[in-house]
Structure formats: structure tokens, C-alpha cells
Length: 112
Length: 115
Image 1 (cartoon, one colour):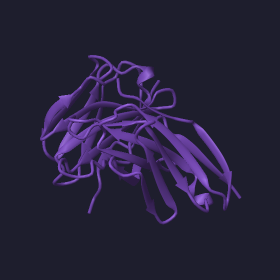
Image 2 (cartoon, helix red, strand yellow; image 1 turned 60 degrees about the horizontal axis):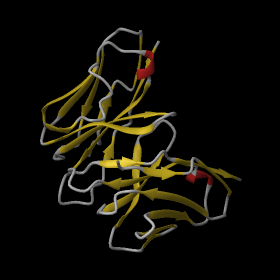
Image 3 (tube, one colour; image 1 turned 180 degrees about the vertical axis):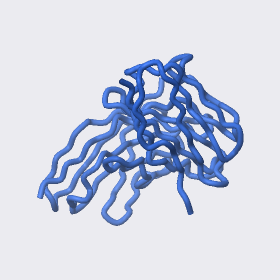
Image 4 (cartoon, one colour; image 1 turned 90 degrees about the horizontal axis):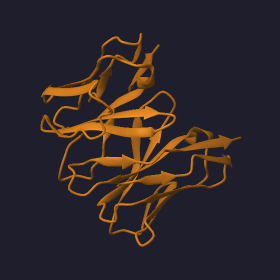
């Protein structure tokens, strides 16, 4: 069945880069997503990448997609304490009307 | 514009009681999703609707769980009878549907504690 996997924790120092990794199973996913969840809140879309792209950059965020290995990563440059949150990778499931499967989430802790 | 609105934000109840969680999706969105978040299982899709019709309820854990969407602006998730293992944060999300990027817009969640 469909599955999305991420490491559970990442700790970095303020100003460093953070890289959060994800693997997924549905090779025909049209879009792959990164969502951010702050404490006590719902998930918010950070960025997404279309499956025919290898890379997408959006200010401090860089998404890399390796379709062959079904590997997605999110790099946050110059990580700030405000970036501390849980980051979820998600894939859209083909022909299932917008259904998204989420990873377990990676808790990013940014130390000053 | 208002986002996805969920109520109640917090509910504490006793085992055996009925629980009803409510969701108002974003106006104009035609897909609605119910997710459950726990430490152990992460974010699980329970059920989703397209144009008010349930499409996939394979994630609904048991017959104690039911969901309805009587119209485009309202959905409920009911647990009867509730059990302590149902304690979780329940999220509702809506989406504009195809063609689009598939982005889901989440509510703030309903935190359920069953004693």
C-alpha cells in the first residue's frame, strides 16, 4: 500500500541549514508536498513540487525530488528559531480524488 | 476569507459517551477530508468526500465511527460509543478539487480526550 516515511527528529543550530528527508511509494504521484505544523495548530502548506520537476526553490526553501529513488527533501537555509515545528511530507495518490498520504512528520528543533 | 472551521476545539468526555465533531469547509471547495493525529500513528486519513459523497472510508477504524456531509458547507464525524483509545486530534481539511495542485486547507483541529 501507499507509504510515506520520514525521520522523526532533527536538531540544528540557528543560522545553519536544515535538510529533512522523505521517501514515498506511489511512483505516479502528480504532486509532492511539504506541510508545516506549529504547536496547537493545523497543517499549512509550505511548498509543493510537480512530479516532472527535479528542484524547486522558494526563498529559503529548496525542494529536491529524485523520482528514481522516490526521495524528496526539503532544505531550509539560514534556519531560524521560528522554523521550529513539525514538517510533513505528503504524496497525492493517483486517481483518488485529491487523497493525500502523509509521513509521520519530522520535528525540527532550532537551538539559538 | 474564513478558513476551515472546526468545533469544538477541545472536548473531554467519558468512555461510552457519544462525541460529535463538526466541520465547515472553505466555501467553494468540493472535497472534504477527516484526519486523525496521534503520537503513535501520526496523521491518518479516516474518510473523504467529493461533492458531499463519501469516496473512501477505508480509514475509519470501526463501526463506532461515522461521518456525514449533508451539504457542501457542513460535515460531522461521530464516535459512538467513545473509548479512551479514540483520544487524538481530529482535523478536517478541504480542497478545491481538480484541476489544482491538490493543496489541502486544514482546520485548527478538535482535541478529543476520552477518560
